[in-house]
Image 1 (cartoon, rainbow, N blue to C red):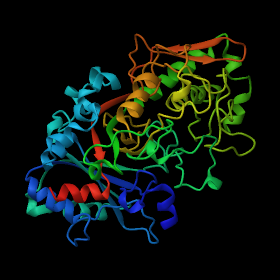
Image 2 (cartoon, one colour; image 1 turned 90 degrees about the horizontal axis):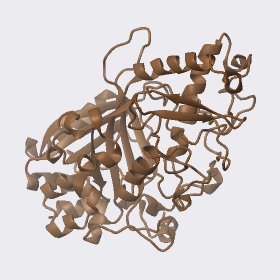
Image 3 (cartoon, rainbow, N blue to C red; image 1 turned 180 degrees about the vertical axis):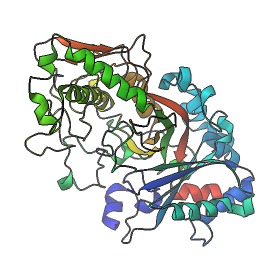
Length: 474
């Protein structure tokens, strides 16, 4: 550990866990808290980093030899820092977008229409009440309940008001509600991940792309550290989002698109006659066409196989890497320019903003919520994803990605003016998505609705362990 720390001028014990490396538990519970009594809340924070037996201990980046029954972490909003008693000078030193909060930046994020903040679930419709998000990771409900009770008991109930709890769980081996395999690719960090086990064609990222105070991808540039230094250094920012997924609408659109494409004059160029046999036994041509549409919109087949390595079938003859691939410049006949995966991370492909290719990478920690959708028994229950999108700069990374790439398509002139077909702020009247073909022609899909809507969210600061001690001492 000393060699690691000296080489990087960074100590894993100073950083909250789940930022640079994931926990991989089956369940998570996010407690949405408001500071009720500042002194009691500060005292409780101190207990969470001092080994106090009655307080959940905040998990750090340090390696463990025995996997704990649960992990615990916190994030603070601007209102949370203010409620804990941070000085005006400290509050003013935070970035503009963090101070404005997610609701204040909603238009830039595409949170419009029914995704607008005035439609968000309580308490997210009143950002001043969302001050601290405490996250518990475990494999069973008993452990989640135990740690939650420790939080509820904080300061004999005087420290916080618990507004709500949001539970998520991996209901189908890392698949999300739309049926795609998730949790596949994350940034690998210099000095944290072994490059010999770096099965990814992308360059390793400096830790400054996630942690404040360290070198970034930009030569000679570091993101500003909120002041005082002990408060900002080793921290990260997080966009916590509750994203409802309309599975019924998504599956219905796959039906519609497949029917249209089967009658399209270029149908056989998209799916050669008899090629449906490679999709599995007894798979019809219509079923195979549905899966092609789902794969083209995402950039992966629903089993996780990337289109860049297997453009015509989800079941390639030889095993392929799910992470080690790139996009050929000016060729989108495998993975379309507008596919979700390629928009969110263009890898080595040529894009208009070429210098930005590797500067907007995010750590994504997402867990589904709600029961799995049963097409035989459709219901109106809400289901979706509890997403954490972690970075060192909300404006330079998360917002730039959401605005420029997801909802404007600025990577390539051929998709500019379109939104991400899965995550984007789409409306039936204006939505469109091109599928390029080897002949040089395009198949154009259009008329699809918004499949993912925002139901709540907040920008949080994930303070380092010294920062938590500093806040406790105010």
